[in-house]
Amino acid sequence: MATLTYCTNLFPAESLADVRSVLTRFAHGMRARLGGIDRIPVGLYLSARACEELEAPDALDAFENELRSLAIRAVTVNAFPFGGFHDAIVKERVFVPAWDDPARRKYTESACRILARLLPRGATGSVSTHSGYYKNPGVDPARDERVARAWLRTAVELSRIEEETGRRIILSIEPEPFSRLETVAEILAFLEFTFGPMLRRMCAEWSVTQGWLEAAARRHLGVCFDCCHQAVEFDDGVGAISRLRAAGIQIGKIQASIAPALTAGTGDAASRAAGLARLAAFDEPRYLHQTFGRGDDGSIVKFTDLAPALADREFLTKAREIRTHFHLPIFLENAGDPSLGTTRGELERVLLNCSNSVDCIEIETYTLSALPTPPTGDAAIFDTIAAEWSYAEKLLARAPKPPG
Image 1 (tube, rainbow, N blue to C red):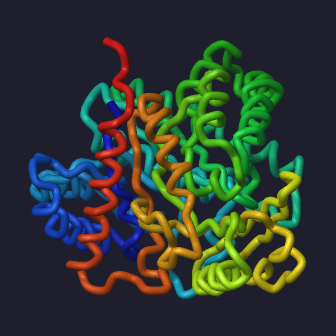
Image 2 (image 1 turned 135 degrees about the vertical axis):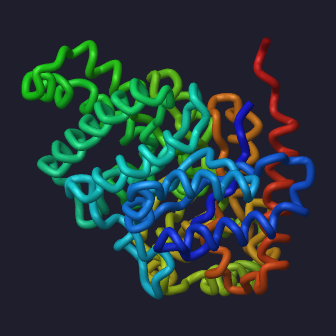
């Protein structure tokens, strides 16, 4: 059965001291609200700076002891944002450094080593990362080769880590709108290239056998399936996960997340206008809010952010449904107003049908503070988190149990 976790990237944390403060706050805030859990399972967000500090002598020992004293257990690590994730403006900088920059691989492998130390022996854990680079203005074949090469190098390192520690880490590549890999179709094609022509080239260069390197790559390279991202793309989540499994691709974790969704439906013009006004309230300056609209004919129009979508009158008129990348509390049926719905139904389908496909399901509502009306004060924040946790638990309790 999948372990349910909550990602701590909703709180600012650059230094190791920041991480410790966040975890203390999280443990105290959630302990009473999650009665009956001996050790709260969390998804750690560790910046590059925090990882570097944790690799100092004795730092990880102390951190491990602190987690134990807080009754917290680390299940997964989010290594997507390198740092500065709560700066005033993040936008496309969240993809920097790209995977063709050695700094990205160094940081990610550090996060993997840290998680391997924190997991019990014999366990499998996931470290999520972005899918290579920001795709706007387009795809660069030379960069693709450098990214694939870096992922294969990391697979080799993860194989070594497993041999030394007995802990298996899956580098979980996270498709996102306007990143190099947006849809499951794109990630399947890219991994076919990585496990095929690129892998054979690296075998010759590194003097290793093809069988050994392919086994390492397929064991340690996988996918982080973010339900919000795929819903925004109008990608069928259940079908996408089925295609990943059929191709033998590891799914390191499913991120439980939902997005605002404006549907024309049978509503009148006034309702549509109210929905657009509510959607405009989500146009905030910190994060990218990639926006997609689907017409009556099934065609999809894409915008790199919400502001240009709202400025395109023709798009707003023709789109039958508009979805925006903005992680909402996952229990919401509407986005603060009945005129603006959410993709909660897509999340429900994934968790009810696919939760037995993974070891970890991570709630990741990092935009709580960016909501038009955010929860203020720890009581309200942790009440919201607890409501998300309870909602996810109820969904998972309804999912069919695996045989045996």
